[in-house]
Length: 324
Image 1 (cartoon, rainbow, N blue to C red):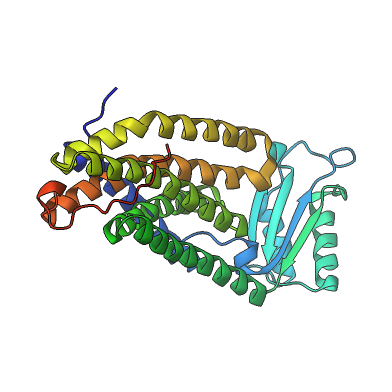
Image 2: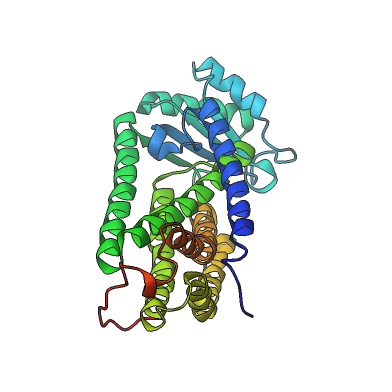
């Protein structure tokens, strides 16, 4: 299989444009609803979360827990603005996220809920609390980590290649981050999926994976430019992508298969973390091949450097061996 991606770049850019548009719409809707581009979890929003499971050994589990019943109990405690989500097998589990509760408030609420919905399984009960200051600090630290990683990548690629390589690689990385955020914005709107600090970890991992794939392709293109400066940049980019295509597909496929196992068997905590990485890794492989490479060819054409042998700014010779 040989791809002529530079001749079809408008098609690939159209696909990315539509996906990014859907992502931005999802984030705008989230902002209107949650005052944030994604549905924030406890880590970022702060508060107390009670994860309660009805003990079916002694309780009547013939019907799922009614959210309206839980909300009426919360209203009597002055917690009517809390977020309620019924989940678990046959709706026998309920997650309640409220403002920060002290020990007495938490005990009172748990007792009232137990009287309303039946005895609870103490072994499955989970209570987490994060203060609003800690939540903001975690959010700020996550954003700072992303910005620092972007800056480091620009510096590294500018030194290893040239500035236009670095800038276009960052464009591809932003594409991957926005696609992943867009998917989770829609998951937050439709399935009440929240993002937490693990989501930031997933984004940082995606950035690292995506730029690694882009560097391999750029390395091959740069080597081809050095060996064949008389050829047009479109042909060199096509050759570079096709020479690394098998590696990109195999690496992504094997990684995604491992992450699929975590999605299926990793439990609630790791499931969405692995899902974020799957989306990011697939998007990263796509953007490295169809976005970063085609943008490089387009930019070299626009800047009059389509044929390096005719350019005054021929590629520097570094003597490095490409790593594929």
